[in-house]
Image 1 (tube, rainbow, N blue to C red):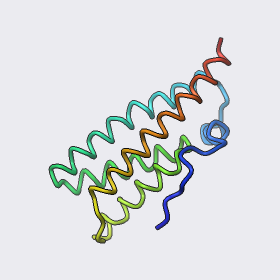
Image 2 (tube, rainbow, N blue to C red):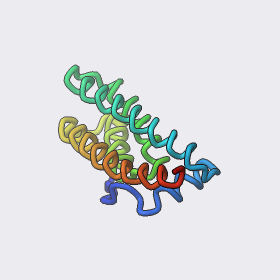
Image 3 (cartoon, rainbow, N blue to C red):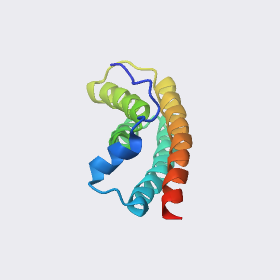
Length: 126
């Protein structure tokens, strides 16, 4: 399974607009902020689950983060989560420490890119 290299789709806001069916900046901001907050919590839970060897929580958090990151256009993060989810579902060998590290890194990078998109949207509200 190949993980996309693009951190955030170049058309992330357009992608999100199409996914939600609205281009209202305040709604888009709310969705992005919710993703950032929830995503940070999921990454923390994933790291905790890794240290506790809890594959069930690893699977659930990877699944949830995969879906939500796809909605905001964080393709690399979504792909990394999909790889972990797939390996856990099929009991395939995978270096879980490395996989979670990749997910954590991908989330951090996507979060930084989303901050830039937030600033653009906020300027539309000003």
